[in-house]
Image (tube, rainbow over all chains, first blue to last red; front, side, top):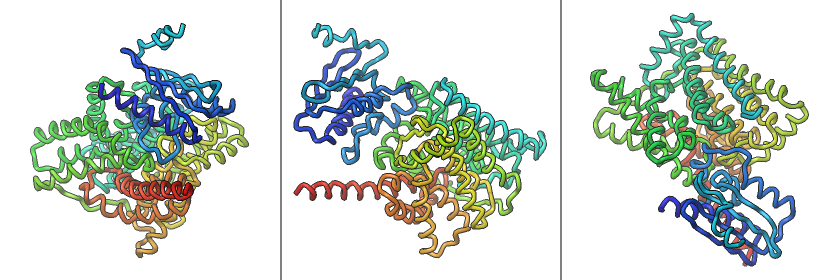
Length: 129
Length: 419
């Protein structure tokens, strides 16, 4: 539990660091926790361009898995709010992310969990249906 | 495995095999093998130039260390990319003056056991395992330098190496937080920190021994050819991989990166530019060494190889020069000979602080270079010369100071601008 708490805290820290750089008036972080995984949503009130969305999406969904970077260098995520947020540190450590504009601003979903964890079977999604 | 990774496997295999063949060719197989065996028993504490005991044997030792690293990367199922290329070339570089298979393997085994203990894949600890070989001299020190009979010292040395390797992952991440990725040789910083305690224990036991530096004064043709050969292999590979216009465009784009850890330049679209950066860094600093009239000894070749090693993982032509200028300035200021061995090594390895210049500009880079030279001269003694990446230790301390001050100023400026 201690490790999970630290891990989620670091991810939220780095993600909010990144989002706060665009100086939003509203920022909502929502966490849903289940046995095999977790879902963290971020909403703000800043609409991003398609180019910005692609850049964020590419950083959060790296082409290759990078275990050698995820654990060791990934521990820097959420460590400092003084410098620009680095989304690749998050991307190496999560299962996947979806990035889109909602009616008010950006909406980012981070999915994390073990190999057994499938976002499509997540109860939050089922509830939505 | 993608095309980029295949290319890197071919390049590294070519370099490792060339070193082995060249080593055997200049000494003959029997002599080279005998020298490699002899090197395993030499003190690996700073600074012991292995080329003093035979250039051919040193080349074969370097090839065996490089092969060990490459095989580990392959079987750990991690990408051969910027960070792993950095580990392999750095290990090859340090096997010219300290790293051997004998003092590396126990550390790697210890990190492997830590990965099993924490239920993580070895791949996720692979960089720690490979760079962790910096503290390998502890193994050799216990086996060969203490007065114990070999039948006791040998297992004790191996066990100490395994124990050190086991605790390295716990330390490495914490050390990274202190300088926030602005010191490229983080494992040097980590091993230096650990080395303080090891040296403290050895001092308390009354068995610490810091040897006199042992340098190869002359320069052989074979040693002079290593860096141009390695550099040309990377440059030619770049030009074979992409059109030369794309390579130079990529090189230009890479210069814009800060280099802060972890910056894998091979993850960018500029593969040719990255390979060119590696080759040009090697050639540029090789020419500097030749220009000031320093002979190409084992440690100097190791320093140059380490600069190249990070050409895909944080160092560029643009972010290294201010640090180097700072070291030159400090040498002149404090009346040190630029050609003196320690100053040359400090200059080459000071590029560990390249991200400071990349992030905060050339002036801060120069200041960091000045501070680095001052620190590196005392840190080796602190850690009993047991940590090969002593510049990583000094660099870490310098980076913590500079980053803390810059962080404070940046916060203060932001607040003031809002008032």
